[in-house]
Image 1 (tube, rainbow, N blue to C red):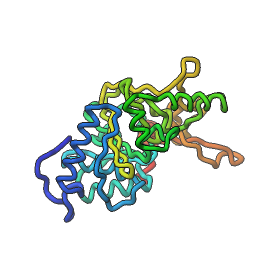
Image 2 (tube, rainbow, N blue to C red):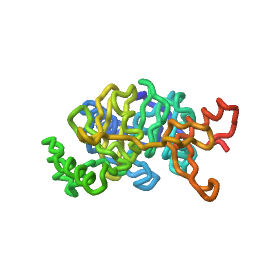
Image 3 (cartoon, one colour):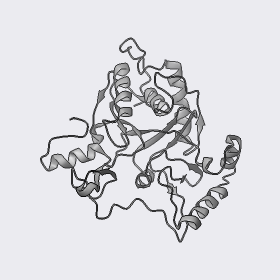
Image 4 (cartoon, rainbow, N blue to C red):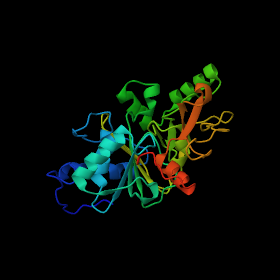
Length: 295
């Protein structure tokens, strides 16, 4: 997928908007991140025509690795029709002309904000995650210089204390997203604000995961077949969200991550799949044609 040959300009822009020198720099930093799983690699993070905080880091990674033969999927918290997904998709299509899809299985590059698709991905795919805060130790240390020192010494004792105090106060670990995880038994990472439900998908996956933080100017990676272990205690284990007894009102699934919505009988809660592509496929199997993003 890393197409290094000269590529024609699209819509008056350089292919994928960024100039070739910038793309080469980001590719070099991405390769270093892949070579050292979990290590945060600094990069220049140039300005883009979208505001920082809207996924500029993930977008720059995607712009650097995408080629004319790729098929792109962009999702926002699982949905292909979210504002973030729609606008990033438009920018990439305008500057590359690549084909797009809502189907997870058909995409070669998937850029995502805050979710990993429910469908298992293959080794021919790359998942690019938009990251607002790449530093997992931000929970316990404000100084970036100090967190770098803690990573270099693999000193994560303060994070363990933070988790312990969380249990003492609440009876369990209450971190709902950005759950700290140890990559390759060496570096602690922030897996981006994905829910706990998605964290196990990182472990020994077939797919290459790339994480881009534009505002913080960091890139890190989880290569295929790499160990990713969420921090847990022997007597209090890591667990994902519990959707027992709940089902999606659109497709009927009871084994996917779901969002709460209101509007049920008496104003009660209803549940709908977060992953629009998976939900639409399950609905299609039931003969229902409407889609999340294709209304």
